[in-house]
Every structure is written in C-alpha cells, then in structure tokens.
Image (cartoon, rainbow, N blue to C red; front, side, top):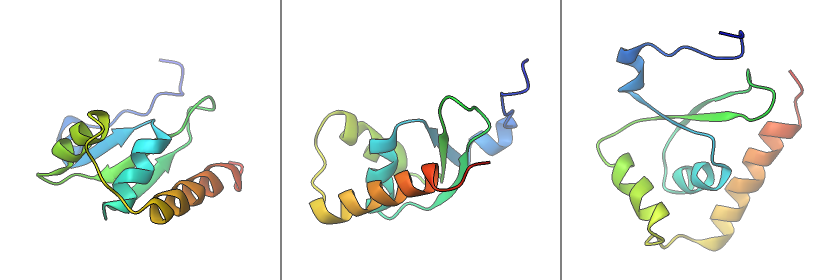
Amino acid sequence: MTGLEKIIPLDKRDIKFLTYDLGLAAVLITLGYTLVDVDKSNHIKSQFIFSRDEHIDKMVNEYWDDKLMLPARSLLENQKMLKNRLYSVME
C-alpha cells in the first residue's frame, strides 16, 4: 500500500456510496442525496462519498441507462459547486 489508499471498513461500505464520477455526483446531489465528504487523498482523482439509502443503486443505474430527468439549471449549479469544492482549496 502506497499511503494514498483510504481503507473503508466493510461495515462502513454498506452505509456509504462512493464514486469518482463528477457527473454522477452532481446528479446525486440534485436528487437530494447528502454528500458526506470528498476524499482528496489520491492526488490524481477525488472520490465523492454519499450517504447510502435503499434507492441510490436504482438512481445510479438510471443515470448510466440515461433514464433520469432532472432540472438542468440545478444540475449545472451542483456540478459547478462540486468543481469549486475540488479546486478552490488545496490540501
């Protein structure tokens, strides 16, 4: 292990949803999911950590299947907010 990996215990994986995908993260926020944290420990890409519920996997599948309908302005504002969060603070 290089020290860049962040180990999440198995019991915590069940209550969190993790993604590196900025678009998916913006969609989940637009859908009302709570962004718990942004893991920037890997200096190449950041991981978005969300609270998991019983519907999140269905929403993720609908995102990948291009079946979601969302308010465009809200989605773009959330994507901009995530980019600001990623790039405005250097750790």
